[in-house]
Image (cartoon, rainbow, N blue to C red; front, side, top):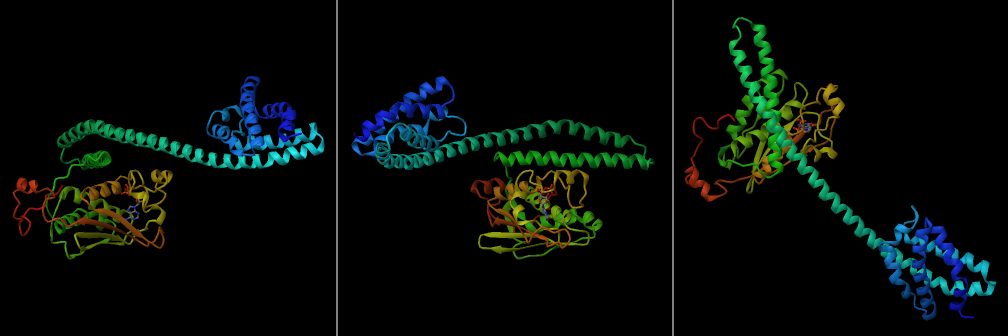
Length: 415
Ligand code: ADP
């Protein structure tokens, strides 16, 4: 008797067995039976011709789609289905055929089953790779949409906050004017309200800046910039906070600091201010902050170094992300650690956005984070050394075809 005839003898019970063990309800099983029918027909053809590729079409279908929903949970895997077919073939042949016939049938079927298992493994890994990359693509689109709506929300919320804030600011100033001069206590309270409003305004302005950077909408007002003037202005701004923390800030006169650049002075001031104020914030009392730099071919590098708590290597990228401030939220509000609780974590992303929109880069170097040993951090700002406006039409606009030798008396205006 040929192997094909032997297979025909056990096909019915074998098919029933496979269907019952794999498909869930009666309806599903009927549907599944028709697919098994096709499989066994093709198996017969493969057995007759000795060519296992007869099975490829159905294996491909099974691996890529529909049948998988017919299988029970946990068995949505064609390899599992084949495994069951092999085991049930063995059992059914052993139970229904004389030993010799069973052995002969199985030795005919085994190479076909092995081919099928190999084929399924390759189809499955292909379809799984496609599936995973599709899923990743959908996830990426979702995340981008989410990030966009978050950034829109920030922009709208910041603008909405700004209106009442301006009102509060105006009325508090008026109340301050009406307070009796001799009442120091009332003036002190009014100053407290004023400070709170100023801080709130800074946060709202930061939120607006972040959304501008996020949406590539930050407009730069390019003009001649004398870097050392900006740095000295910053030193003057931080005079009080440095004194109260007994810190030392040294601004070195580095090669290039006298040079005239084309940049947006207010934005460069803002970017450097964030770096220096962080250096002050994250350095213990009595520590020192150094601003130095050098010229490189086509660039000017400014470094802001401190003797502060440092930044762990794994966080050296995170801190430049929006809301990337590293303080644990619980530490943040309770202030259990004196260095935490600085702000909403917008300063560095804004500085990075400003520097990058000038065509530069910003990065940090630090041995690691240690509040006791204080290894310190160095922030590097690399700015392109532009000696004329990036767009020649701007030169006409500013009337600076001929660049001035030295800054005008009152340059730069405090932002
Ligand atoms: P914020 O200071 O408002 O939290 P930033 O964006 O300015 O937000 O800084 C993000 C985080 O980077 C800070 O919370 C802090 O953990 C870390 N960081 C920034 N500058 C320094 C520094 N000079 N030394 C140590 N850590 C710093």
